[in-house]
Image (cartoon, rainbow, N blue to C red; front, side, top):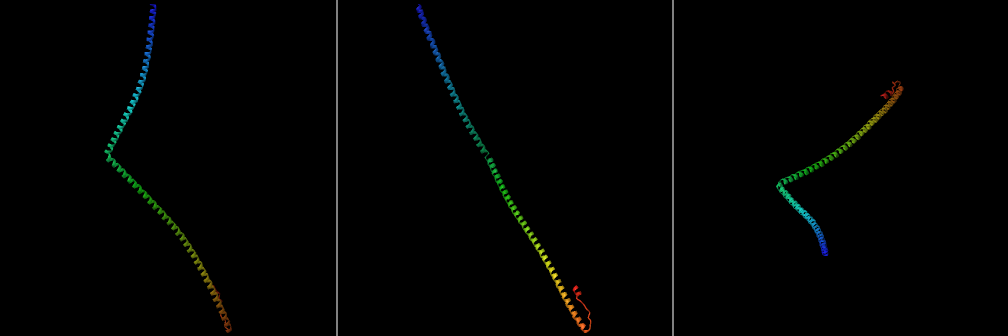
Length: 208
């Protein structure tokens, strides 16, 4: 019985050890399975997140496209609705720009014309001043010539007057000499004839 009991005990111990080993293996397998399942769950969550992000981007792009299309459609409709107003505004701006250009061209031409007139006026004024200066010089030269001519004429008249006086003096002296000589002759003739004539000298005539 003891041996049987011992044997039974040994069998019981071997059975219990085998059972405990099996439990440990099962627990390890379960943990491994849980780890694999955890890893699989993490991968699937990552895939879901990526898929959701892709779907979100697709939705955003589609939404943006619809919004752009709607905006473009409304802009086109608004442009069509306001076409007459826009065309009128464009025409107004074109007309305004055209008038501005014409005004600028006209002002430019007027400035050029005024500048040309000013240049011509300045040139004419310069020529006029130059001519006036020349006339002044000519008048001055003419006045000097006239003064010189007057001086020459005056000197000539003075010379002629002096010459006339000299000639008259010579003639008077000659007449006085002739008269004196005649008186002397008469005196001598009278003396021979017994008559005494009155003596006269030519001093009085020379004093005239």
